[in-house]
Length: 150
View 1 (cartoon, rainbow, N blue to C red):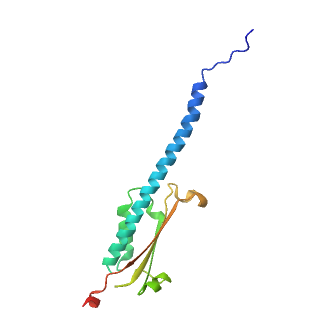
View 2: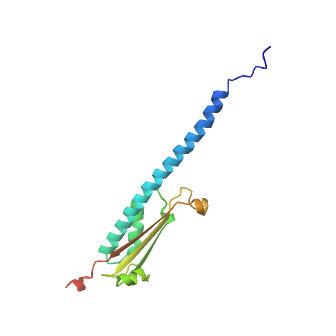
View 3: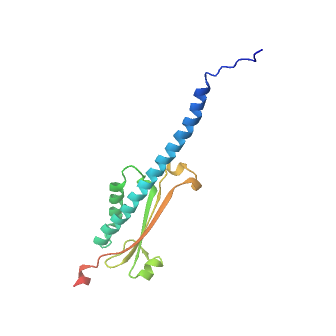
């Protein structure tokens, strides 16, 4: 005597649903890691561009330079609203390490550039422990004023 017969028609669908979900999650995580890596590289390049342009401008119009470089380097991989840039300067490296004065300073000043960015796609909706934050600190010296060169 045979026991009750159960159909096996839906088993393939169930197995596919279980494995496809795991595959989609792994694929999404891989794409997010790649996006964060590229965004980090773009932010690093932005720091170098900001520093170079402020250095050549001898600290003038630093706010405009920061905004223009971040807008040009964005490429849709990070939100410019989630990026903060702080500049401080001092005439000596010891002063710059101690904090210095706010702003990009003037000719021959040592400048500290602090860039911090939240690289999550959902921005502030993600809880703090799960946020992907990137902080870059960069020191450079402004070009000397023309009077100092002569």
